[in-house]
Length: 332
Ligand code: AMP
Ligand code: MG
Image 1 (spheres, protein in one colour):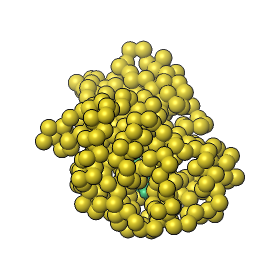
Image 2: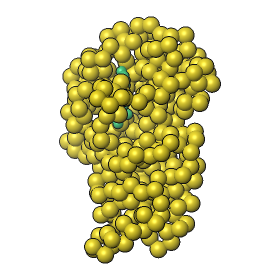
Image 3: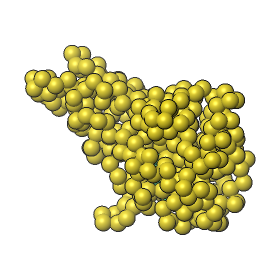
Image 4: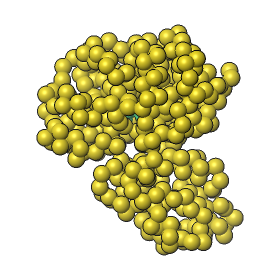
Protein backbone atom coordinates (compact mmCIF):
# COMPACT_ATOMS: atom_id res chain seq x y z
CA UNK A 1 0.00 0.00 0.00
CA UNK A 2 1.25 3.48 -0.85
CA UNK A 3 0.90 5.92 2.04
CA UNK A 4 -0.02 9.42 0.94
CA UNK A 5 0.68 12.52 3.02
CA UNK A 6 -1.79 15.17 1.93
CA UNK A 7 -2.37 18.76 2.93
CA UNK A 8 -5.88 19.61 4.07
CA UNK A 9 -7.61 20.55 0.85
CA UNK A 10 -11.18 19.71 -0.18
CA UNK A 11 -10.10 16.69 -2.20
CA UNK A 12 -8.08 15.19 0.68
CA UNK A 13 -10.95 15.74 3.11
CA UNK A 14 -13.39 14.01 0.75
CA UNK A 15 -10.99 11.10 0.40
CA UNK A 16 -10.55 10.93 4.21
CA UNK A 17 -14.34 10.86 4.71
CA UNK A 18 -14.71 8.15 2.07
CA UNK A 19 -12.03 6.00 3.71
CA UNK A 20 -13.50 6.37 7.22
CA UNK A 21 -17.03 5.62 5.99
CA UNK A 22 -15.79 2.48 4.23
CA UNK A 23 -14.21 1.19 7.45
CA UNK A 24 -10.61 2.26 6.85
CA UNK A 25 -8.19 4.11 9.11
CA UNK A 26 -6.93 7.69 8.48
CA UNK A 27 -4.31 9.71 10.38
CA UNK A 28 -5.25 13.31 11.16
CA UNK A 29 -3.78 16.26 13.06
CA UNK A 30 -5.14 17.73 16.30
CA UNK A 31 -3.79 20.45 18.58
CA UNK A 32 -2.30 17.78 20.90
CA UNK A 33 -0.78 14.99 18.76
CA UNK A 34 -1.73 13.23 15.49
CA UNK A 35 -4.53 10.67 15.80
CA UNK A 36 -5.20 7.37 14.01
CA UNK A 37 -8.93 7.51 13.39
CA UNK A 38 -11.70 5.06 12.47
CA UNK A 39 -15.52 5.00 12.52
CA UNK A 40 -16.39 4.60 16.21
CA UNK A 41 -19.58 2.67 15.38
CA UNK A 42 -17.79 -0.07 13.43
CA UNK A 43 -16.27 -3.05 15.27
CA UNK A 44 -14.07 -3.99 12.32
CA UNK A 45 -12.78 -0.46 11.78
CA UNK A 46 -11.95 0.00 15.48
CA UNK A 47 -10.22 -3.38 15.61
CA UNK A 48 -7.97 -2.24 12.74
CA UNK A 49 -6.61 0.55 14.95
CA UNK A 50 -5.55 -1.92 17.64
CA UNK A 51 -3.97 -4.23 15.05
CA UNK A 52 -2.08 -1.43 13.27
CA UNK A 53 -0.66 0.03 16.46
CA UNK A 54 -0.04 -3.25 18.27
CA UNK A 55 -2.10 -1.67 21.05
CA UNK A 56 -3.01 -3.86 24.04
CA UNK A 57 -6.68 -4.92 23.83
CA UNK A 58 -7.49 -3.41 27.25
CA UNK A 59 -6.36 0.14 26.47
CA UNK A 60 -9.50 2.09 25.45
CA UNK A 61 -9.73 4.74 22.75
CA UNK A 62 -10.97 8.33 22.80
CA UNK A 63 -13.90 9.22 20.55
CA UNK A 64 -13.43 12.52 18.70
CA UNK A 65 -16.44 14.54 17.60
CA UNK A 66 -17.02 17.73 15.63
CA UNK A 67 -18.06 20.90 17.40
CA UNK A 68 -21.86 20.87 17.68
CA UNK A 69 -22.14 17.05 17.67
CA UNK A 70 -24.91 15.97 20.05
CA UNK A 71 -23.09 13.77 22.59
CA UNK A 72 -26.37 12.83 24.33
CA UNK A 73 -26.50 9.91 21.89
CA UNK A 74 -23.29 8.57 23.36
CA UNK A 75 -23.50 9.39 27.08
CA UNK A 76 -25.93 8.05 29.62
CA UNK A 77 -25.96 10.68 32.36
CA UNK A 78 -23.58 13.30 33.63
CA UNK A 79 -22.75 15.22 36.80
CA UNK A 80 -23.63 18.93 37.14
CA UNK A 81 -20.05 20.05 36.67
CA UNK A 82 -19.71 18.39 33.22
CA UNK A 83 -21.64 21.01 31.17
CA UNK A 84 -19.68 23.77 32.97
CA UNK A 85 -16.39 22.13 32.01
CA UNK A 86 -17.49 21.73 28.41
CA UNK A 87 -18.48 25.39 28.26
CA UNK A 88 -15.13 26.46 29.72
CA UNK A 89 -12.68 24.18 27.89
CA UNK A 90 -14.24 22.72 24.74
CA UNK A 91 -13.25 22.61 22.02
CA UNK A 92 -9.79 21.94 23.40
CA UNK A 93 -7.26 19.45 24.79
CA UNK A 94 -9.62 17.98 27.42
CA UNK A 95 -11.06 14.44 27.14
CA UNK A 96 -14.06 13.81 29.37
CA UNK A 97 -15.00 10.27 30.47
CA UNK A 98 -18.77 9.68 30.89
CA UNK A 99 -21.07 6.73 31.59
CA UNK A 100 -21.63 5.24 28.13
CA UNK A 101 -24.89 4.39 26.36
CA UNK A 102 -22.97 1.59 24.64
CA UNK A 103 -23.89 2.92 21.17
CA UNK A 104 -20.33 2.94 19.81
CA UNK A 105 -18.40 -0.24 19.10
CA UNK A 106 -17.68 -2.18 22.29
CA UNK A 107 -14.04 -2.31 21.21
CA UNK A 108 -13.68 1.45 21.76
CA UNK A 109 -13.92 1.24 25.56
CA UNK A 110 -12.53 -2.32 25.83
CA UNK A 111 -15.46 -3.55 27.90
CA UNK A 112 -15.61 -0.55 30.29
CA UNK A 113 -19.07 0.99 30.80
CA UNK A 114 -17.63 4.47 30.25
CA UNK A 115 -16.74 6.43 27.12
CA UNK A 116 -13.99 9.03 26.63
CA UNK A 117 -15.01 11.91 24.34
CA UNK A 118 -12.98 14.81 23.01
CA UNK A 119 -13.82 17.83 20.86
CA UNK A 120 -10.48 18.96 19.43
CA UNK A 121 -9.97 22.67 18.84
CA UNK A 122 -7.61 22.65 15.88
CA UNK A 123 -9.30 23.81 12.66
CA UNK A 124 -7.66 20.89 10.84
CA UNK A 125 -9.17 18.30 13.20
CA UNK A 126 -12.54 20.03 13.01
CA UNK A 127 -12.44 20.10 9.20
CA UNK A 128 -11.70 16.35 9.18
CA UNK A 129 -14.45 15.51 11.71
CA UNK A 130 -17.01 17.68 9.90
CA UNK A 131 -16.17 16.03 6.57
CA UNK A 132 -16.47 12.55 8.10
CA UNK A 133 -19.67 13.42 9.98
CA UNK A 134 -19.30 10.46 12.38
CA UNK A 135 -17.70 10.06 15.81
CA UNK A 136 -14.10 8.99 15.19
CA UNK A 137 -12.31 6.68 17.62
CA UNK A 138 -8.64 7.65 17.64
CA UNK A 139 -5.59 6.98 19.76
CA UNK A 140 -2.29 8.69 19.06
CA UNK A 141 -0.94 7.74 15.60
CA UNK A 142 2.23 5.97 16.77
CA UNK A 143 3.13 2.32 17.10
CA UNK A 144 2.29 1.19 20.63
CA UNK A 145 4.98 2.23 23.17
CA UNK A 146 6.72 4.56 20.69
CA UNK A 147 6.81 8.34 21.05
CA UNK A 148 3.54 10.08 20.05
CA UNK A 149 3.63 11.89 16.67
CA UNK A 150 3.47 15.67 16.39
CA UNK A 151 4.08 15.94 12.63
CA UNK A 152 2.73 14.06 9.60
CA UNK A 153 6.27 12.78 8.99
CA UNK A 154 6.34 11.15 12.44
CA UNK A 155 3.14 9.28 11.52
CA UNK A 156 4.69 8.25 8.19
CA UNK A 157 7.79 6.94 9.98
CA UNK A 158 5.60 4.53 11.99
CA UNK A 159 2.94 3.64 9.40
CA UNK A 160 4.51 3.88 5.93
CA UNK A 161 2.86 1.23 3.76
CA UNK A 162 0.28 0.38 6.43
CA UNK A 163 -2.32 3.15 6.02
CA UNK A 164 -3.54 4.95 2.91
CA UNK A 165 -3.81 8.56 4.03
CA UNK A 166 -2.14 10.95 6.47
CA UNK A 167 -3.71 14.42 6.59
CA UNK A 168 -0.94 16.96 7.14
CA UNK A 169 -1.89 19.94 9.31
CA UNK A 170 1.69 20.95 10.18
CA UNK A 171 3.27 20.55 13.63
CA UNK A 172 0.86 20.19 16.57
CA UNK A 173 0.69 23.36 18.66
CA UNK A 174 0.09 21.63 22.03
CA UNK A 175 2.51 18.73 21.78
CA UNK A 176 1.34 16.36 24.54
CA UNK A 177 -1.86 14.33 24.67
CA UNK A 178 -5.12 15.67 26.09
CA UNK A 179 -5.94 15.72 29.78
CA UNK A 180 -8.19 12.70 30.49
CA UNK A 181 -10.80 13.57 33.10
CA UNK A 182 -13.12 11.08 34.79
CA UNK A 183 -16.56 12.72 34.92
CA UNK A 184 -18.44 9.80 36.44
CA UNK A 185 -18.02 10.73 40.12
CA UNK A 186 -19.02 13.50 42.48
CA UNK A 187 -15.90 15.49 41.73
CA UNK A 188 -13.94 15.30 38.48
CA UNK A 189 -10.74 13.30 38.65
CA UNK A 190 -7.75 13.57 36.33
CA UNK A 191 -6.70 10.19 34.92
CA UNK A 192 -3.97 11.62 32.67
CA UNK A 193 -2.44 15.06 33.06
CA UNK A 194 -2.25 17.34 30.05
CA UNK A 195 -2.60 20.88 28.79
CA UNK A 196 -5.81 21.56 30.74
CA UNK A 197 -4.49 21.56 34.30
CA UNK A 198 -5.96 20.54 37.63
CA UNK A 199 -6.07 24.20 38.70
CA UNK A 200 -7.99 25.17 35.55
CA UNK A 201 -10.54 22.38 36.09
CA UNK A 202 -10.93 23.10 39.83
CA UNK A 203 -11.55 26.79 39.10
CA UNK A 204 -14.64 25.80 37.09
CA UNK A 205 -15.85 22.61 38.83
CA UNK A 206 -15.03 23.74 42.39
CA UNK A 207 -12.72 20.79 42.99
CA UNK A 208 -10.60 18.32 41.02
CA UNK A 209 -8.76 15.17 42.07
CA UNK A 210 -5.82 13.43 40.46
CA UNK A 211 -6.12 9.67 40.27
CA UNK A 212 -3.14 7.48 41.15
CA UNK A 213 -3.64 3.72 40.97
CA UNK A 214 -2.81 2.05 44.27
CA UNK A 215 -0.28 -0.78 44.23
CA UNK A 216 -1.85 -3.91 42.77
CA UNK A 217 -5.01 -2.07 41.59
CA UNK A 218 -6.11 -2.10 37.93
CA UNK A 219 -5.76 1.54 36.88
CA UNK A 220 -8.87 3.51 35.88
CA UNK A 221 -7.11 4.76 32.77
CA UNK A 222 -5.54 1.55 31.51
CA UNK A 223 -3.19 3.38 29.13
CA UNK A 224 -1.28 4.84 32.05
CA UNK A 225 -0.12 1.37 33.09
CA UNK A 226 1.94 0.78 29.96
CA UNK A 227 5.48 1.63 28.99
CA UNK A 228 5.04 4.68 26.81
CA UNK A 229 6.61 7.47 24.84
CA UNK A 230 9.85 5.50 24.51
CA UNK A 231 12.58 6.54 22.13
CA UNK A 232 14.25 3.62 20.31
CA UNK A 233 17.66 3.95 21.87
CA UNK A 234 19.07 3.50 25.35
CA UNK A 235 17.83 6.13 27.79
CA UNK A 236 18.96 7.43 31.17
CA UNK A 237 17.12 9.63 33.65
CA UNK A 238 19.15 12.19 35.61
CA UNK A 239 18.42 14.92 38.13
CA UNK A 240 21.56 17.02 37.60
CA UNK A 241 23.99 18.15 34.90
CA UNK A 242 26.87 16.46 36.82
CA UNK A 243 25.11 13.12 36.73
CA UNK A 244 24.39 13.58 33.03
CA UNK A 245 28.02 14.55 32.27
CA UNK A 246 29.34 11.36 33.91
CA UNK A 247 27.03 9.20 31.79
CA UNK A 248 27.83 11.26 28.69
CA UNK A 249 31.59 10.73 29.13
CA UNK A 250 31.23 7.01 29.77
CA UNK A 251 29.10 6.54 26.64
CA UNK A 252 31.51 8.58 24.49
CA UNK A 253 34.51 6.63 25.79
CA UNK A 254 32.72 3.39 24.95
CA UNK A 255 32.42 4.61 21.33
CA UNK A 256 28.76 5.64 21.55
CA UNK A 257 27.06 8.89 20.55
CA UNK A 258 25.30 10.27 23.63
CA UNK A 259 22.96 13.24 23.62
CA UNK A 260 21.37 15.16 26.50
CA UNK A 261 17.74 16.32 26.39
CA UNK A 262 17.05 19.05 28.95
CA UNK A 263 15.53 22.45 29.65
CA UNK A 264 17.31 25.61 28.51
CA UNK A 265 18.89 26.48 31.86
CA UNK A 266 20.50 23.02 32.18
CA UNK A 267 21.84 23.12 28.61
CA UNK A 268 23.86 26.24 29.50
CA UNK A 269 25.99 24.08 31.85
CA UNK A 270 26.62 21.48 29.14
CA UNK A 271 28.50 23.55 26.57
CA UNK A 272 30.65 20.68 25.26
CA UNK A 273 27.88 18.10 25.02
CA UNK A 274 25.47 17.42 22.21
CA UNK A 275 22.13 18.67 23.57
CA UNK A 276 18.48 18.83 22.53
CA UNK A 277 16.88 21.81 24.26
CA UNK A 278 13.26 21.55 25.42
CA UNK A 279 12.86 25.26 26.08
CA UNK A 280 12.08 27.24 29.22
CA UNK A 281 8.31 27.45 29.78
CA UNK A 282 5.97 24.51 30.34
CA UNK A 283 4.11 25.21 27.09
CA UNK A 284 7.35 25.33 25.11
CA UNK A 285 8.55 22.06 26.65
CA UNK A 286 5.21 20.35 25.92
CA UNK A 287 5.40 21.48 22.30
CA UNK A 288 9.00 20.30 21.79
CA UNK A 289 9.23 17.09 23.84
CA UNK A 290 8.05 14.44 21.37
CA UNK A 291 9.76 15.92 18.32
CA UNK A 292 13.06 16.00 20.25
CA UNK A 293 12.65 12.43 21.51
CA UNK A 294 12.13 11.30 17.91
CA UNK A 295 15.07 13.40 16.72
CA UNK A 296 17.27 12.03 19.50
CA UNK A 297 16.56 8.36 18.80
CA UNK A 298 17.73 8.81 15.19
CA UNK A 299 21.29 9.78 16.04
CA UNK A 300 22.02 9.00 19.69
CA UNK A 301 23.03 5.63 21.11
CA UNK A 302 22.18 6.97 24.57
CA UNK A 303 19.64 9.71 25.21
CA UNK A 304 20.13 11.26 28.65
CA UNK A 305 17.17 13.20 30.07
CA UNK A 306 17.72 15.75 32.81
CA UNK A 307 14.51 16.28 34.76
CA UNK A 308 13.31 19.87 34.18
CA UNK A 309 13.22 22.06 37.31
CA UNK A 310 10.27 24.13 36.10
CA UNK A 311 7.03 23.40 38.01
CA UNK A 312 3.36 24.41 37.93
CA UNK A 313 0.73 24.55 35.17
CA UNK A 314 1.31 22.13 32.31
CA UNK A 315 4.58 20.87 33.84
CA UNK A 316 2.63 18.07 35.61
CA UNK A 317 1.77 16.69 32.16
CA UNK A 318 5.24 17.34 30.74
CA UNK A 319 6.99 15.63 33.67
CA UNK A 320 4.62 12.66 33.43
CA UNK A 321 5.58 12.10 29.76
CA UNK A 322 9.24 12.95 30.35
CA UNK A 323 9.68 10.48 33.20
CA UNK A 324 7.85 7.72 31.33
CA UNK A 325 9.97 8.28 28.21
CA UNK A 326 13.19 8.09 30.23
CA UNK A 327 12.02 5.48 32.73
CA UNK A 328 12.39 7.79 35.72
CA UNK A 329 10.28 8.89 38.63
CA UNK A 330 9.85 12.64 38.64
CA UNK A 331 9.49 14.72 41.78
CA UNK A 332 6.37 16.86 41.77
P1 AMP B 1 -4.24 7.82 23.46
O1 AMP B 1 -5.41 8.08 22.59
O2 AMP B 1 -3.22 6.92 22.84
O3 AMP B 1 -3.71 9.11 23.94
O4 AMP B 1 -4.79 7.06 24.72
C1 AMP B 1 -6.05 7.33 25.26
C2 AMP B 1 -5.99 7.43 26.76
O5 AMP B 1 -7.31 7.62 27.25
C3 AMP B 1 -5.43 6.18 27.42
O6 AMP B 1 -4.62 6.53 28.51
C4 AMP B 1 -6.70 5.46 27.87
O7 AMP B 1 -6.47 4.58 28.95
C5 AMP B 1 -7.61 6.64 28.22
N1 AMP B 1 -9.04 6.28 28.10
C6 AMP B 1 -9.75 6.11 26.98
N2 AMP B 1 -11.02 5.74 27.25
C7 AMP B 1 -11.12 5.67 28.59
C8 AMP B 1 -12.17 5.33 29.50
N3 AMP B 1 -13.38 4.97 29.06
N4 AMP B 1 -11.89 5.36 30.82
C9 AMP B 1 -10.67 5.73 31.26
N5 AMP B 1 -9.62 6.05 30.45
C10 AMP B 1 -9.84 6.03 29.14
MG1 MG C 1 -1.13 7.09 22.84
